Image (cartoon, rainbow, N blue to C red; front, side):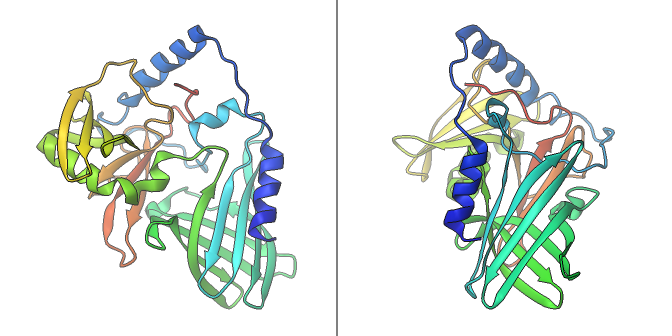
Length: 292
């Protein structure tokens, strides 16, 4: 399946975005989401984490009539592929399709359990002809940051390397981590040893705004000028929450222990395998209600 066809297929499945919430409903959702932003991240390790697969579209998917989600993959050798999530009861099946570079393969994949083992996403299955299929996605700035995952595929005896990007109705802020990193490092340094994790980042007229939580559970917004210096840093109120904030959080320069409070962690590495940090997904709350 070509990339254009994949996008059209997913777009058709997703359908029209549902709009028209009342102001009161929006306010209540903001309060609920804000209360959850720091509820788990700063508690001590040891929470009971379900071993079943935990993966989902960005939190705003709760506003959509359908939840189809997936990845678009490309390789330097000219191949292209896709993985589309198909919820089925309490499980998630993944439709896999690959073509190009003399290859053609389709398969039904399962999400490897335990999910995010060693901080990476793994999928396994077989083609209709019985060839084993294995896909590994490592979060990181692939293709100079144009894609958010390094992709390794093994189909039978053939090994392929490339890049992958999430394909969804709404983007996570974390898909553009490479763009935010200069500002994140400035802002983490500004909070010194108080910074615990990043909850969000977005572009402003002068540079980048980075939202962080400190190790006491307080939240801050740090604004940079051209990502060269910090212009201002101010505390945030409990109801001041951005759409998609904390989905996921980002911990700089370390990989926390899996099962730390409510979070499962995904390692983020560069092309040389050096650790950049970790994304944390709240397995207690799951996908949050839409906010904003």
